[in-house]
Length: 130
Image (cartoon, rainbow, N blue to C red):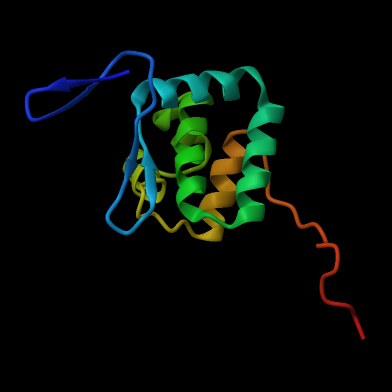
């Protein structure tokens, strides 16, 4: 529930706030939501894999960075994932920031630290070998 508060609106506990940005994109940011997703991913790695596959299929890098930040929390936090991926924590923060553009080697190392890896699948109706 949103309630008027001064000049703005106050979000009540337990809700996810969706903001419509000037460029028409939606931004969802709510710490409780991120915590809930991290808990789900830590309890069910298959869900994490399914989520990442869906995001990769859609090709939305922003969503990928959000999910990887949530999964980093689920799989032990920045320090632990960074150490296992052989990255320093600051580098991991930057890599997974909204403006992050991870190199293949970094993305592979991060996923490996979480017990996952990238793979390739054929797309039905894709290019045919001649």
